[in-house]
Image (tube, rainbow over all chains, first blue to last red; front, side, top):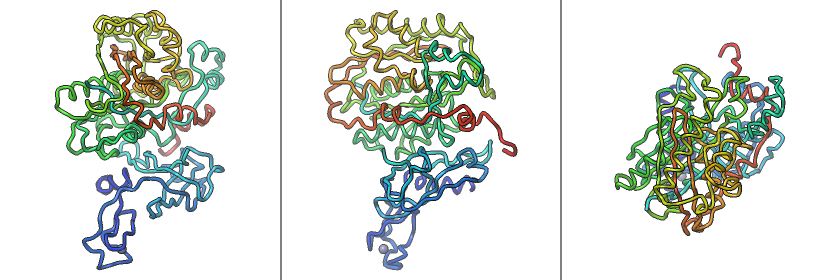
Amino acid sequence: MSAPRFWREINQRYNLVGTECGNCGKKYFPIRSVCPECHRESIGKMKKVKFSGNGKVFSYTVIHVGSSMFQMQTPYIMAIIELDEGPRITGQIIDCETKDVKIGMPVESVFRKIGEDGKSGTIYYGYKFRLMK
Amino acid sequence: MVGIVSYGGYVPRYRIETKEIARVWGKDESIGKGLGVFSKSVPGPDEDVATISVEAARNAMKKCSVNPGEIGAVYVGSESHPYAVKPTSTIVAEAIGAGPNLTAADYEFACKAGTAAIQTCMGLVSSGMIKYGLAIGSDTSQGAPGDALEYSASAGGAAFLIGKENVIAEINKTYSFTTDTPDFWRREGEKYPSHGGRFTGEPAYFKHTMNCAKGLFERTGTKPSDYKYAVFHQPNGKFPVNVGKMLGFTNEQIKTGLLTPRIGNTYSGSTPLGLAVILDVASPGDRIFAVSYGSGAGSDGFDITVTEKIMGIDRNPTVESFIADSKIIDYATYVRYRKKLWLGGE
Ligand SMILES: [Zn+2]
C-alpha cells in the first residue's frame, strides 16, 4: 500500500468512519459515494458516520502461516465483525487465544499497528478487535 | 483552578516473570525479589507507543463528555516514540478525533516526559491559550538482553486531560528540580540504553526525587501526613518505597500507586499510571503527592486534591482491569514479540 493512499483513508481506519444513506438509512463501511440499494436516489444524501467499534463475531478463521509482515503474530485470528450499526468488516481479533473465539461473541475495536513499509518506511495504524471484557 | 478533567491508563496484556528472565541467563531467581519486580508487561507484536497512547487517550475521553474538538494541545512524552522523526502526538490527536485546530509535539526526558507534558498543559490552560490540553506519558522500553534493565523495562501509559472546568482533581502546585546528571542515556542509532550502574541510585534518583519533594513541601506548606496517597517514579519496586520512607510517608500511603512489582518500569508511563490507579479509587477531598523522575536528570512534583466531581464520572476501564487481564509468556515468545531476534529476509 502506498503512503498517500493510506493517508487519505486515515480517518476511516483510525476512527471507523463510514457512510449512512440518507434515503434508506443503511450504513456502510468503508465509505461509499452511492447507496447500492437506492442508487440514484441516494446521490447527494450519503453522509459520514462514526461507528462505535462495538459488534460481534460473524465468522472467523485462524491463520497459521502468515505473510512476512504477520509472522511474528502467528497463529492469529482474522474475523468478519458485524458492527452494532450493521456493516460487516474484516479485522484481526487480538489479545486472546485462538480457542477462546466463538461466533456471536461481543467485541470492541482497539487501535493497533496494521503493518509497515519495511524497516525504514511508514507505519500503518488502524482498527483491530478484542473480545469484550 | 487548573486540574485533571479526565484520565485514562493502558497496560498491554502480556507479562514475563523476572524468574523466567533469570532462568534464561543462568541467574538466581532471587534477582527479581531483590529488585522488587516479579513480572513486567510486554507489548504485543502490533503495539507501540502510538497505540498505547491512543488506548490511554481514548480511555480518558470515554470518562468525560468533552468534545475532542475543544482540545487545544496534545503532548506525548516517551523515550520510545515509533519514529525518530514524525510525531506520535499527531497520530493520537487524529485517533481521538481532535484537531486540526490544535498544537502538538512529542516530549523526551527519560521517564519524566509525561509529567513535563502535564506541566505544559497546565501553563497553556492557566494562561487561557487553550481550553483543554491532553498530556500523555507512555513507553515500550527495552533493556539489552541479559542486562539488569531487562528485568524491569516494560510498557504502558496514561493520559490526562487538563482543563479548568469540571476538574475531578485540582493541581494545587507543581514544582521541578533539574540538574545535568549522566546516569542513563542512549545515543542516536543505538537500540538499547546505557546506564551508570550504581550511579543511578544516590546522586540521581534519590537526590532529585528528595529535593523535588522537599521543595514541593516548602512551597505548599504541607507535610506527608496531609496526603492520603503518594506516588513516585518506579524504576524498580524498592526505590519508590525507600524514597517514600525517607520523606516520612507510610506504606499505606505508597502501596496503592506502586505498580512496578506486577508490571515493571513503564518509564514515561510510570508516575502517570501510578497517579491514574490512585484516581481510580480516590474519594473527594483526598490529597495526592506525586513526584516523577527522569534520568539526565530531573523530577516534577505535583500536589493534587481530588474534588467531588470524581463521583460523577464512570472510572471504567480502570488501570487495575488492564493489569488483572494478563497472560504470562515465556522468554522465547517475549523475544519474538519484542523483535529481539531478526528473521532472515527482513
Ligand atoms: Zn440507501
